[in-house]
Image (cartoon, rainbow, N blue to C red; front, top):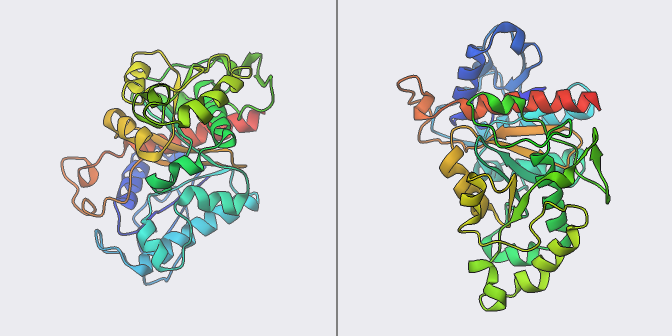
Length: 344
């Protein structure tokens, strides 16, 4: 699989280097790391490397610029093309700056949409943490546009993705893992399709899935907003035939995650970005992994941004004051997903 550098001036390259230097040589054999030549020279000798960008490019930690954005984009393009060419089965992406990328002609709101454009498919953004599993029905859109982006189709895709997060790759229902290294053993089942999708004898419908309401108190029967009453709840009721474990109506977003942490649900569908990521990052900030579902190739990434303010300021064994565990988990989960896809 390919591993991209992300923005060279951000914290991502430091975290990647920390993880790779901690890996044994056998674990590096399946990796091809893509990034600027000056950074690649700092990585272990046992990992394959592909340089992109100008040979004399050197990033300054914490000082992003357009040259670095071009390097980040070149790494993404090379990784995407390598999968299409059959060279790699998936990609782990380092964090990028959308604002910097926009300055060099990048037109996508995030990496999720970029890889969907390069590979095809209908992406769904999911997150695997040690305590929560979360899927987003919408993600990189302004809050004011969220109601118009919600549809029966987008909600159905999100529920199907939540089922694949909650059901292990061999059909065994899995509860959120508790150990620091356990993300490596979390398999994802293929996206559920049709009325009776099965995985090795067990169905996606075993998953206990909750969906957040859009409005306070999930609309309070229409008193605080009509979206639940008119669109969301009827869609969930219809999907109950495919997913009997799905709660048949939206639940208030201010309590559903606490209930998931107590073990009532295997995955939660949030309707917009911060509704899902605020609770996830509150409990799984250092360990959660972003998983793009619905694409022909595996794509994972650490669940944090470029953190330019921390780049180059490592201390006390925590690179830039940040933990490399999310990066390590993104690599481990990508390996697991690729193995499971190869079995099917």
